[in-house]
Length: 144
Ligand code: DQA
Image 1 (tube, rainbow, N blue to C red):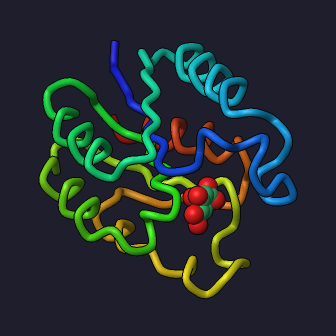
Image 2 (image 1 turned 45 degrees about the horizontal axis):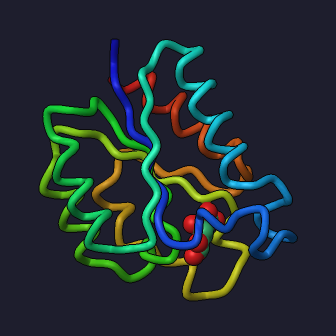
């Protein structure tokens, strides 16, 4: 069975509490349960990892080699400026990454229009709330 990882970066544990007008009212735990069930229903083994710490996310990315067949990554605000995260993804090229955002970052502040990780990801999905994760997992299904 293919094994995937859904990685969530800074502040994504606060969904349901933070900026509800943007990220909705549903809390992170419920969303994570739905993500896991969806992935398992389409035949993936699925782990979820959330951290507010850039270094922990980088360590986790390094550890995906030989363990996971693909990753769905919502890097939160690190998306827009973390060259370290980008280099970590680039160092595990055998593992495809799908960049995901709940909000449509292109409709929001200028600083969110730029992603420094898109170029090292297989593709990008944004703007569909928690369904962005489902779409990311479906995209992986087509790739691995
Ligand atoms: C986000 C968008 C980012 O700009 C923001 O910093 C987040 C969440 C999203 O899922 O829409 O934390 O990645």
